[in-house]
Amino acid sequence: MQTFEFGDPSAEVVLVQMVDDHDLKEIEGEFAAIRESFPGKIRLLAVKVNDWNRDLSPWKASAVFGNEDFGDGAAATLAEVMTCCTDRSRTYYIGGYSLAGLFALWAAYQTDLFEGVAAASPSIWFPEFVDFMREQKIRTKRVYLSLGDKEERTRNPIMASVGTRIREAQELLREQSVETTLEWNPGNHFKDAGLRTAKAFAWVLESGKRGE
Image 1 (tube, rainbow, N blue to C red):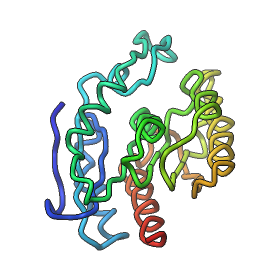
Image 2: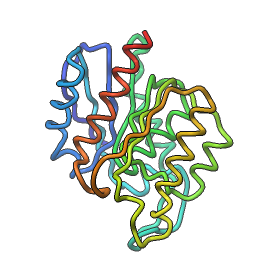
Image 3: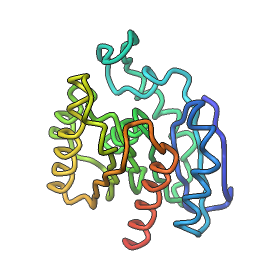
Image 4: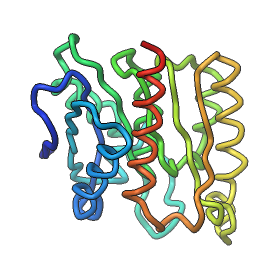
């Protein structure tokens, strides 16, 4: 996987985001929006995945749209990400959009490395994921969740469950005393991905600052 860096290399606060080619087209604008909301020193590591459905999926699942099944490459991806986050004197946050948002949330159940999770429009409809959350304990202090207000209005029955699932997820996090919010953005899943991700990171950064 290839990593692109933005911001101050010496920053004590490091954001980690899994991206694809589409995300990279918006990443500079996204980072600028984060800096507007949180003007402190920040470094962003944008990690480009090779196979979106395989590399970010926590376990295998049948295709929900199109013909491409989901793999189980998340563990290997996280192991590689953690090689970029070995300096424990820094504070790390992980986030992303869509399946990358789901990966970020899953990652916080695997390690206590991340101070917060910025899950923007995460693919929380992913089969059995909320059941996984119910059975496990997350290892981070704060989680931002968001969804477009039209995302649950789809003919695909699995993807249409996203609204119900994200409400359940927020409640589960609250039960574990995690500081969390659920923001509803106007539009469908494909609207303003970079801006939504920037808002997600800005929230966890501000939450982390308050918690210092």
